[in-house]
Amino acid sequence: RRRTARQLTAKLIDAPEFRCTTTSSTEDLPHELAEMIRLHQARWNAAGERGSFASERFRDFIFDAASDFFKRDRLRLVSLYHRDTLIAAGLQMIAANRALAVYSIGVDMTKPELNPGNLLNMETVQHAYE
Image (cartoon, rainbow, N blue to C red; front, side, top):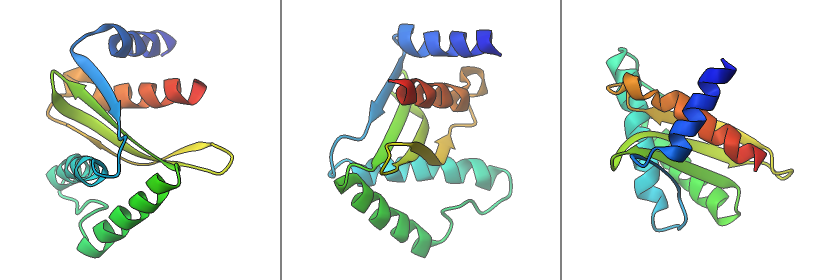
């Protein structure tokens, strides 16, 4: 498993076709959060489930909470792209002690050969160690 983790980390760092971004402005937050939710819902809907964000009321709550957390520097929304196509995104909360908690992720399940979920996890671990 360690070898696989190293290979995935190298793929993120060395492969020019992969790009990772974090939301940097309140203006970008709604669109980027909507994209994470879109990936999350697509995965669960394909499995015959409603998904965490099926309720409009809950989605509104998450958008409001994310905005509040972002303004207080307590939110990290990371997006992973392969050749300019979003393949994974994660909504992460930052505690007062700076501990990082992954709240929700969305992964493009049509690209299993890219290991988007594992790549996103490796990016998160790498960020936590920096």
